[in-house]
Length: 260
Image 1 (cartoon, rainbow, N blue to C red):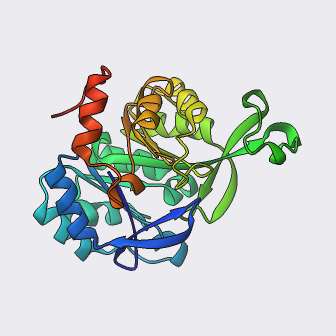
Image 2 (cartoon, rainbow, N blue to C red):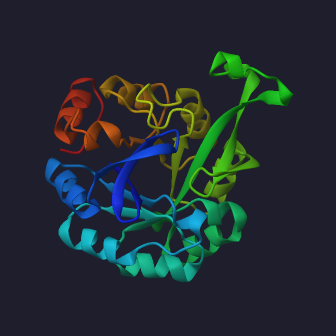
Image 3 (cartoon, rainbow, N blue to C red):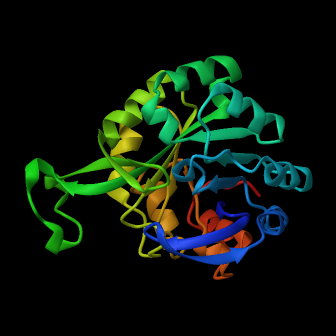
C-alpha cells in the first residue's frame, strides 16, 4: 500500500503532477492496517525537491497506531537521516535521490543497519534508444526503448540507465527495489510490465511494482509476466475502488500466494 505525502496530507496525481488530496496519512495508515495490507509505504514526494527533512512526527504517529511494516522515504540524505527515521518507528527506509547522487550511501546504510532496512526507489521513464523519436507511439517498441532514472520526486531527469542502476543498487546492498514507472503512474492503465520484467531478471532481491494499478488484472500481470515479488497501489485503495481484502482474495483464487 502506497501513500504519497505532501505538506502532511496523502495526495495522488497522474504522472507526478495534478495531485489531489486523498486524506490524512495517519488515518489512512490505520484504515489499511485494518484492511490487512501487508506493508505501508510513506513517500514524502516534495522533501527532496524542497531540500527539507522528512516529517518525523508523521512517521511517529503512524508507527504508533499500526501493526504492519512501515517503509518511509523522501528527504533521506545521510546515515543519520536513516537512523532518525528508523528511530521514529519506521521498519525500512526508502532512498532515491540521495542513492543516485551518493551511491556509497547505499553501502554504508546497508552495512550500518542491515540490508533488510534499505529500499532503493527507482523512478524510471521510457525514452527512445539511440535518439529515435517514437513519442507519437505513446510507448516506443520494446526493442527500441530504454529507461532513464529521474530524481527529486520525479522532477529531475538524469542519464542514469534504470536497469544498470538497479543492478548496481542491489550489488551495493539494497534489500529491495521499489520500481515506479513514471509513464504509468496514476493512469490506472497498468504497470510497465517490460520494465518490471527486465529489472526482476537483472537482480536477485525483491522487486516491488509501483505505478499504474487500475484493477486486479494489472496486479496479477505484474506478479506473473512482470516477475515482480510484490505490488504496490494507491489510487484504487485511496478512492475505495477496492479493499485490500478483495484484492488478496482474488489473487489467491488465481494461484498467487498472499498473506491472509
